[in-house]
Image 1 (spheres, rainbow, N blue to C red):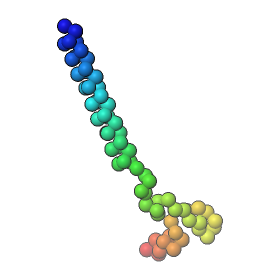
Image 2 (image 1 turned 180 degrees about the vertical axis):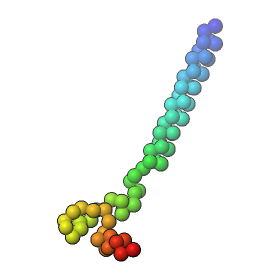
Image 3 (image 1 turned 30 degrees about the horizontal axis):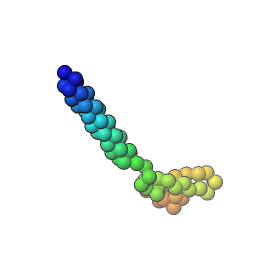
Amino acid sequence: MSNSQNKFIKSQKEKKKQQKKKEKEERKKERQENNRKGADLDDMLAYIDEFGNIVDVKADEKKEDDND
C-alpha cells in the first residue's frame, strides 16, 4: 500500500515540476517577444526645433511634410 502511495506522490511531483518548467518557458518566450531592447533608433531620438521645443521629428523632415 505504501508503495503505491509513493508512486502516486512521485508522479504528482513530476507533473508539478513539468508544469512549472512549461510556465517558465512561456514567460521567457513572452519576454523575448516583448523585448524593447532592439527598438529602432529613431524611436529613441528627440530633436529640438527652431523654437527650442523638444520634438520627435527632425526639422528637415517636418518642413518636407509641410510642403506636401
